[in-house]
Length: 172
Image (cartoon, rainbow, N blue to C red; front, side, top):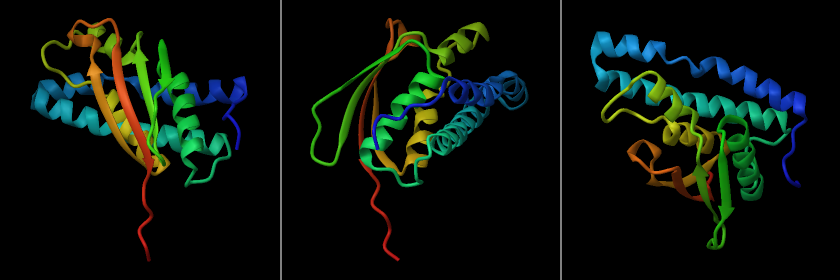
């Protein structure tokens, strides 16, 4: 398979399908009812599930099998970033055999913007790591996903170091 490409109509459809789940009012209601700890936990669980649904839909739209190659998985991850995260840059880094290694910079983070707009203060959950975990699960990847810098702590961008490997299939 070559580079994963989607038509503009397909990309717009995927963005539209998943933009509806951006509502965070339920998190604020849950925080008022059960406290921020429960609200954060539920929010992170929902972001992981959203990521898995997004990647499954992307794989279907790109006509990629459920167990893509490492190259296909890396391409799908980059497409997902371009669809659902604005203001990103990424670069490939040297990787070991059977591994892909990326540095991702998120400059204009939609999650950070939502947190700021909703006035979530203090140590509150950022769902992006969990969101990406859903993507990795759907792709059948083991991922070391390390947040090196975070915008909410005063950096100009979130910087993420990601190492990807195909998950070993369990023998029957």
